[in-house]
Length: 364
Image (tube, rainbow, N blue to C red; front, side):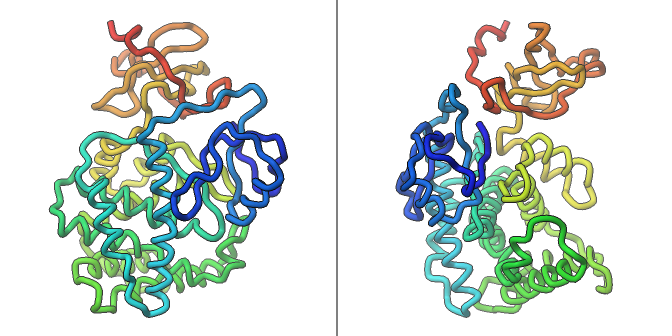
């Protein structure tokens, strides 16, 4: 599986991921060969790019739940965008309440882990897709933390609005490839703070929503020079949004960078406990699959392997089958873990990040 920019997609390539329109209607299924009209359609969608299969590569397996999640992301992204544009246009966002209820009903009471696949993004929708994903992750985290329905919906709403200021950033800065200058970063920060101000000072939004937005605004100021420091005590909900935000940011598709693996994203968050609350990161691990059975990994001994049994207590210590040695490494055993750890997830020989395996062979 290869990520290809829209401008570089060729007739005859095969889609590796399904593509939907704004209504969640399937446009192109995985495995379909690309023709000229499809390339034109992708350009109309303004996607950064898509994943294509190599010549002999099989279509990667996907469960019905994973397919429905991708369809949900595509369809609700456009609803989020409409809501955010209404707010910036000083209109009452008519679809907001329905979206809050929909996200809460799907993810606000979920107890089992889910596969959190990233969907394709483009210049027109990467802010709204990010905001939607942060809201979904926030709902999952709030559920695990046993927050009540009212507080959970406040949090979901704040998550939808948390990045609204980015829509005020000039396009040439927002979509610039490469590092921003200090002057450009100052503009971005000014726009983010303006977005927080729009929500935080608007009394049409519940106080339970505005308090999270205000805390996020203060936290941003605390990270910037030339702003007075406010040693606020962050609410658990604010910490939830921060963790959801950075996880989606690190693992998302951008035009100028490859997405980071979920495993590497968690390691970064673990290494910055002053920024990202460790307890909330622990709970995120309980909400989504980071190293599911079938994950293809690189080990510190230079060997590649497949996760054959997850470790529900310690994420990075599953049972791994070494591909070179054909040995089982139980990283939950202290002696084994002292010698071998997981460096990161990698692609399989046929370019998938996960394979289907018969785990019953390794259960004894």
